[in-house]
Length: 141
Image 1 (cartoon, one colour):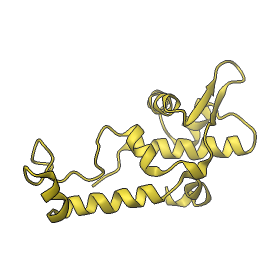
Image 2 (image 1 turned 120 degrees about the horizontal axis):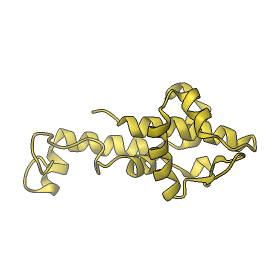
Image 3 (image 1 turned 180 degrees about the horizontal axis):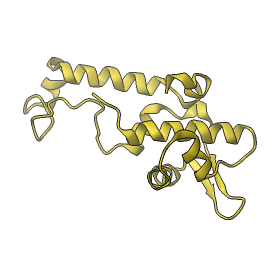
Image 4 (image 1 turned 135 degrees about the vertical axis):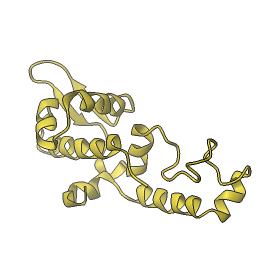
């Protein structure tokens, strides 16, 4: 199981934006890119998704940049995961099966399959972890 690069970079960018917002500043894309070692083009894709979901606000122009739209305590990692990753599940039940289910019965899978149990546990961790916690513990990311 691996959290996608898009999610990891999105979290790093949001921590940077949150710190700038807390200081009353806007975070410029070039600053985020340089500080977090993320290409500008990739960062644009990530920030576009976050902006469309009203997690951040953008301002154009020479004094432009990004700021948080939501309090960091209200943003969970699971919300960010759902916004930035195309996969519905954190851990796929059966990566060799195109339907991504252990069996033809999804309910049966959720109670018998180790991958489904891991998905439930990981999802719970992501739901219980907020952006605010990551800002306090930047070494975690």
